[in-house]
Length: 559
Image (cartoon, rainbow, N blue to C red; front, side, top):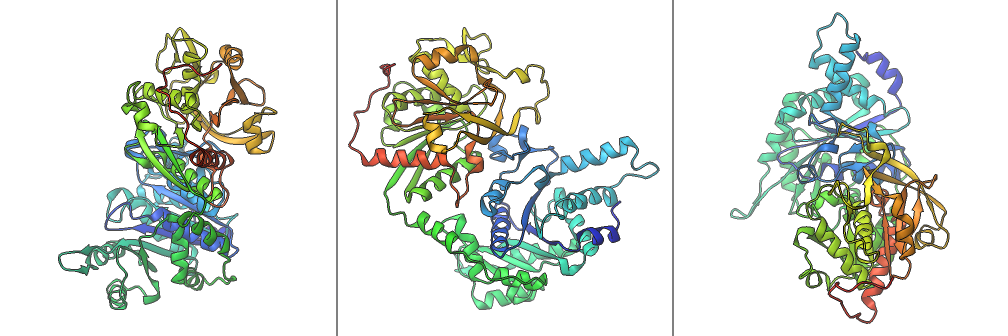
């Protein structure tokens, strides 16, 4: 059990902000938390962010993308919630496994301790053992940070979130009220028939929170219409929140505008006052310029087709969506993205679906569904020299397609989809042959990649070695590397020992690059990833060039 005295001694220099949500889900707690983090970082504080997820899965790694959205992978190989992507993009810091805690991880740790005998003689209960474990997870982030911002997943009133809410209630008592603030994100609906904004859902949400023992210090009110002074006073009166703590969260053109909107209302000033901190005003010039370039690009447009397996839920590719935006920002170009299901593609209609785009991206994924459609899309892009970007599965599809249609290995495939393929150009990683468990067992996290001299990849990165994040079990079969290279598919990046293919490209193509890793996970709005910046540049340039005759994709490209 963590003693209050111990906590105070260890953490007396750190401040804590807890972000909760009420009324409905998907209000944007992650964006709010990340925006507060950005404002405080701009004021000179060392900030980190953390997400508590109430599901019993140890991590989201085995969850369906249609249920959970993207799995965001950190440098240390943790499979985490997509909100960690927002955190990293806003505060421009790499996070770790310690920044995403699930109910499953908490209970796994508690049960392991009980089996070890750590609680010998005690009846293990939610209070204090589970709540102490949660407080310990907060505590671990404190020593190296001035401010720890923790988002509580779910909605106040959900039974799953109760242990986390109880833990943060206790934590405020443990570390002192002057060191903790509670931010509650809520919803102010507009009833069109009445022509009115309604505050009652917010009142009920705060009441639910107060019944748990948490009085919010700030209410961030998500709304489609501006809050009048009268409505803000009403909210403050009935929720016991000071008027300066009632903050309007209007819909904005881009999530990157949220920090500016919160700054305009002085949220960071009031937060610092409540936490008894002093710091100079932030310089948001660079951030403001980045937002301007997104909202008012001056150098044309790039229309990008993303052909994937999970396009019915764009959150499945959240980091790709944001990285494409970042590529547009770096080129001062508007990026228009169309999310196309690979199941819609076949040899007859692929040209009709793709002819109006200036770039094609094939993202990651698992399973047989939609693979032939991806292969058809890759072939169309290759034959017609449309800028192509393959990521993870996208690289594997590029290799399979090239082997079939350029190397004339008609039965080429991946053993993931056809175990007894006669030409398995993609096969299981050697390290995966003895793996039987599904959770957390892929090749995960950051690994180095050596880039070949004279390659497009080397030119794009401007360095001979890079580090990128991975999430895969399958890899290019080394037995086919020479054949692929001889026919024009260059192995442009490998692991340091040369054993694993990390990047491929076609040299005599307008722009054809693929990586086994996930570069989207390291892209930032203020530091766009070089591959995405280069891809958007190529797509925009292609769009401005004279039109190129579009093939039906049936003829083979020159070898």
